[in-house]
Amino acid sequence: MIRNVVLGVLKPGVTTERLDAALAAVRGLAVTGLDARVVAGRDLGLREGNASYAITVDVASEADLVRFDRDPEHDRVRRELLVPISRSMQQVQFRLPG
Image (cartoon, rainbow, N blue to C red):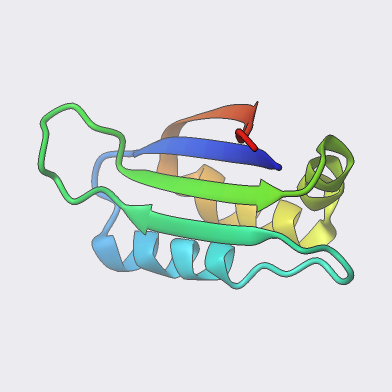
């Protein structure tokens, strides 16, 4: 199992409503024939200096992650909803134990 983690920091002035709409679109992503678990949420603000939001995507293999990443709807959501509101986005992928 592969986990992709995205941490994003919002641009100044982005509303909670706009972030929530973008994250809802991310949670709604589904690639036909691909079993992917997508979780997304905004930071609770419990520690200063945190990222603004996090997204995780769990898939069975590296090939599945590439397929998810190249999906046209995923690309649209990233390009139209996340990139415009994010000052920065970082990713890491790792294999889950087991």
